[in-house]
Length: 228
Image (cartoon, rainbow, N blue to C red; front, side, top):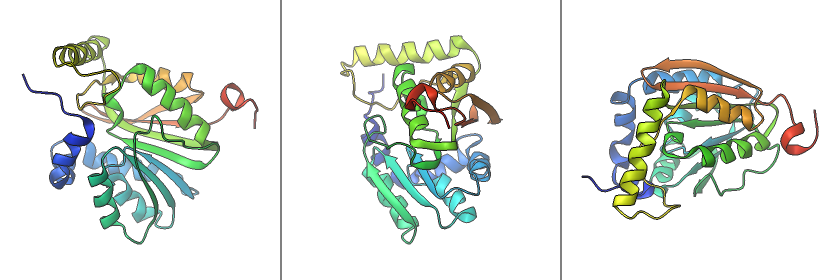
């Protein structure tokens, strides 16, 4: 039985081969980076990137929108260091931390994105995060998520059960983020986003299990107390 690694340790140990792995070994990612860049609204001035890693999605986005201001959050400093080396002249605020506790602010961003990062966390954590993302976006803003998603509830249940079993066997405390895939179904991902306030959530891309959803802020009553 392999030992669970903390998220930061896992990615720090693999940073040198990360780009090649994502572009060649994970089905759908190479195409997904291109698709995500095409979906970022051309009017975007400020963008929030959650779990940015080395910025493979930003590589493509900067080709289209070279002057945007980016806030990139990642648990692993080594990943952010690689991102900074790639794009030294870009306007980037790089934050090493977990996006569940970092303050995004209110009505700050035109667009938020995440790429292959959400499939390690529980429904509860993600639901709270989606509420934060919703509140951080301006009216009319969009959230684009590309992630590992499954089709059947039995698949989701299996991976969450295995994660719980391994954590219990290895004595991993609650609240410690470990690298273990717990993909949700597309239906559950959409429900969580809708419950956070996103009225319009649409699947726009899927190759194998690499799936992309886009969600739009059209209503403010639920979480900010006003309607625009």
